[in-house]
Image (cartoon, rainbow over all chains, first blue to last red; front, side):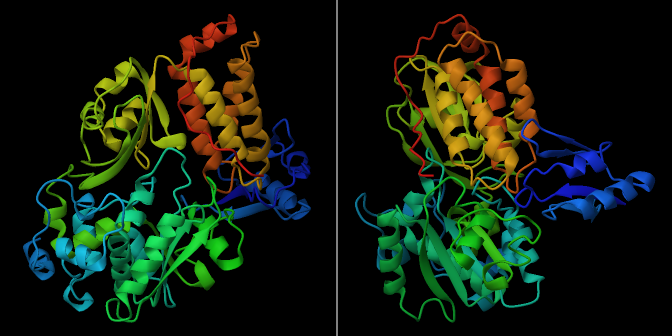
Length: 68
Length: 428
């Protein structure tokens, strides 16, 4: 199981992640991502991987879910 | 526990009852000298005579810096890593309403150094760094003098060093402290790695609050059973508490964990005015209304169900002559300005929350509480460190406890006659 996480220090609020993974990421009024902490599987995991690759500051991470 | 206790038996018995830590304070004006320190507490037992980690585990000591993490677990986590560890004693105490770590470093530098040296010896570390705010000249002087006084003989193979750290609320956060020691930047870092994994000079690093280490120095001498003679089974021992606001004798007191809040107030000379609320746990803590605080004890297990936490045990007594909304607005502004300004949600979110509180405080008759509550919920967990979470907890409790004052402000009324919370200017 994998989980999406943001490195908030690296994140500059470009917002691409919310466009590529709208089912899991929304933006606050300043453009910074609010990430659904639930693990991603299947189609969502593929979308998540694409969003991670697209992040211009490499701030979006797909991590092994340590809770499982 | 008998065997463990026998191993740690010192020639001098542990102080019966309280104070324990503050028993070593020999003068109101000067740090205890090495001779004075040794006459009260005796020498630390030799590292080979005591399994410190086992002893600390049996004592149940919880970190005294605010998070309350079990000290033995941290010791084991550092010991399990490869490489020679480093010990960092955190005496930075950026919290404006807390003074207990400054008291320890200024008056009992040898007790702090004992704890740092004992932890270093137990872990095989060769270096222990005591970090103090660079504005705390007295503390730095006391430490430097104490380190010189100990010479090379006392701490066998452990080099002790005092380091001055930039002032500020987040500079003492443990990843900020490690980053400062590594490259001079006192700002939190993204985790992992945590300091125990990769800290100062990439070494596994034990970061412990100075009071935790002072307690550890007593446990090493007098044992875990002695330590547990005060406090509760789950939160054992004594603790230093800083109390200020509307009490006759504000200051730092040593109490048993579990002491009723009203007993602490009595120790501090009683209240000087009618009381409206208590701020418990510092600026990362919570307000408690006067009535709910009346039955509260200085114990996480008692405060948690009340929506509060003890944290680093900084307590402010807010009199009815002050306004909780105005106090909270100033504190929120201080917290927002104290952000390390690295994470978007903290930079913009805390500023928005602080501005909203300031508008309420200024009696602008616009009810923003719904949006304010949403912003508060929204910043939680979205910083690299827990700064936004701490600020969110404080803000939530302010809206709950001062709901009546908030209504009054919306109608243009405020009864504040004085300010209570110290909110130092933040250099940005």
